[in-house]
Amino acid sequence: MARILIVDDSLFIRTKIGEVVKNAGYDVIGFASNGEEAVKFYSQLKPDLMLLDITMPLKDGLTALKEIKENHHDAKIIMLSAMTQDNVVNEALHYGALDFIEKPVHDLQIITALERIFSLQD
Image 1 (tube, one colour):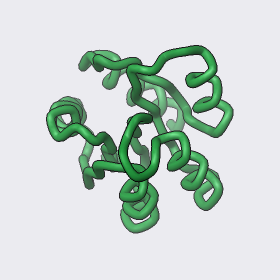
Image 2 (cartoon, helix red, strand yellow; image 1 turned 90 degrees about the vertical axis):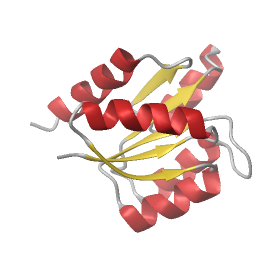
Image 3 (cartoon, one colour; image 1 turned 90 degrees about the horizontal axis):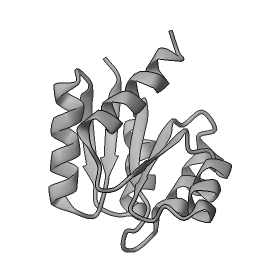
Image 4 (cartoon, helix red, strand yellow; image 1 turned 135 degrees about the vertical axis):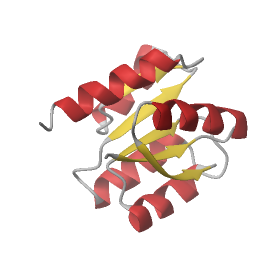
């Protein structure tokens, strides 16, 4: 069972995504509420995949993505954001994000992205 770390500054969003991920048969191993926690928890928990919001306090998701990928080249990260301008999406993909899900997040978007990424491993 794939182990997922969920990072978003909104408790409501973290909880909602966590329920979707669990109901889809994945293991939620932790939650973080800002980019600093994202970097720290990724190193500690070594998830199979991280769902990472962009707009957060202390350290934004793009900065956290860059730091995680510098230290964990094989990190699998899906970005989440209401900011869907092409330059933001392209920057996230350039720094190694595997996918970009636009907020508001719909359950099927998350499930489809997870299935696509984990089916590539089989």
